[in-house]
Amino acid sequence: MSDLTSTNGHPLVEHPDRADGEPIPNPGLPEHQPRPTDVDPALERRAERQVAAMFGLATLLALAFCVCYFTIDPEATVFGYGALNLALGGTLGLTMLLIGVGAIQWARKLMTDHEIIEYRHPVRSSDEDREVALTQFRTGSAESGFGRRTLVRNSLLGALGVLGLPAVVLLRDLGPLPGTALEHTVWRRGVRIVNDVAGTPIKPEDVELGQLINAEPALFFPQQKPNGTVVPAEYEGTELNTEKAKAAVILVRMQESEIHPIKPQANWGYQGILCYSKICTHVGCPISLWEHQTHQLLCPCHQSTFDLAHSGRVIFGPAARSLPQLPIGIDSDGYLIAMHDFDEPVGPSYWERG
Amino acid sequence: VKFLSSRRRHPLAGLVVLVFGLVLTGSLYSAFRPASADQSSSDTQLISQGRRLFVASCSSCHGLNAEGVLSKHNTNFGPPLIGVGAAAVDFQVGTGRMPAARPGTQMEARTPVFTAEEIRALSAYVASLGPGPAIPSKNDYDTQGLTAEQIAQGGQFFRTNCTACHNYTGSGGTLLHGRYAPSLLGVNPVYVYEAMLTGPQAMPIFSDGVLAPQEKREIIGYLQSLQDQPGYGGSKLGGLGPVSEGLWGWGAGIGALILATVWISNNGGRVKKKGQ
Picture 1 (cartoon, rainbow over the protein chains, first blue to last red):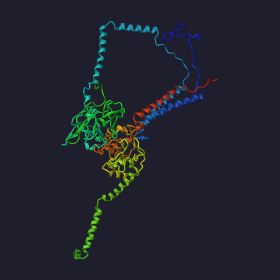
Picture 2: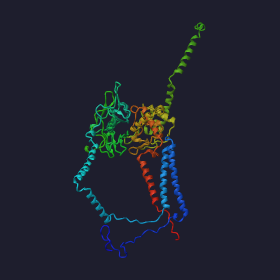
Picture 3: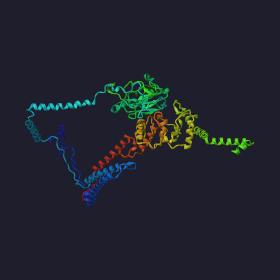
């Protein structure tokens, strides 16, 4: 049997004792052993009844689903759960489970149970099949004139090629490029810092030691002028959300003696009130998890921790940059305002920022 | 009138007028005297009772005059309590966080050690040391009469100010260095209000000047609506987000699938061939 070769071309080692050249005899199939249901008619009938009972129960539950749908009040609760959802999910789920379990039980206990061997067929088609396929391809090519009518063929190829352009052009919708939009927020000199949600301006004397305020620029809220007129919000809709995502800040107050700012930030606070960007410099989660005793601000997403008494420097976690600080002061009415925009981009680092 | 005019020169007339005037003044005084006159003497009593309790149970950490005690490393061993107000005492002692069983990273809520009367006395004593937030009245935190809009607005305030630590469902979360924000579900509204007002332990203060009393009330109303909300989507799994949901999905869900697979592929019971 020297013509035997393995799949990788090396000749198989012939085994002297065996006619088929395999070193280990083919064990074949184990001896067939019948199931209890094959030999005992009583057990067979019992299995039959079991399976039929499951299918029958599934039928009843499917009907029960319909009844529940129409009879249960959507507001009703049972054990603190919504009764309707519980009933619909329970009946429909059990219906499908019982059909599935019944089908498998049917196959396991009652369907014929003899072992068969099915060999894998080779991946390569037979030579005749390959010949027929090639002939058909050539005939088709000749009859369509694909090779002969070059004008038609080339114009078709041209059309198909240009079809790629719309897909490329649509990529423009991913842009336009942000330009310098990431470097600026709507904060500018004189913009009042107002309480988020309520939109009320904040006086320093209302801010207590250990206080945390989630704040926004007044531009996002209708503001009342001293003469009683109400100025509508400068931003709304998508634009509001875009700007809010960058301009959100937190205000905290600590003892002035506890603040150890890095040089340029030395006079950015106001009587111990400090204002920082609320957007984590790691991947941009909003952070306001502020521990007033340790002056540490923790981002709940990846545990970046910023020390707000030390100009927002990172003391733990994956964030690479300090939390940007907003310089603040008060206006002539005594409300807290921004002195200028953040002097660095807020939020996560990006490619061009370096 | 003749009776009066004929006897007005009687030797005893002056005495009668004097007695009449005294009785009138006395009864007028008792009718219109300031209501606090009696109160103040009982307040003094309450404060001195509070001071006795304070000296016995609190002074070892907070100092004999509540001036605070510093640790070896110059950090607060027990912070000064001057100016923290009655609300802080009512919160800390009323929830059993104080008196602390032992120093640690966080004082946990326990069964209160003091009775309501003793807590009142302690609060009165600490409040007498310096101005601070008072214990809120029932009107401040009672959520009766809140409209659906106000509760929804309370939800906005809650999501803006509270969820970073206490979770979107109010079920709490982790903080730094082993501390944690406790669950807010099932907490007496007065303590929720006092916590916002006084900023216990790691929690910052949300003063009335910035988060108005009405807004605090709305937050409490939203918390209660969260709590009363039936689980329309089934079990909330503690409302802890991906941790408990993932644990359930990977453990129970995939576990059940593996068991089903094992059952389907199992060859089942077999008998020896008939006649053998």
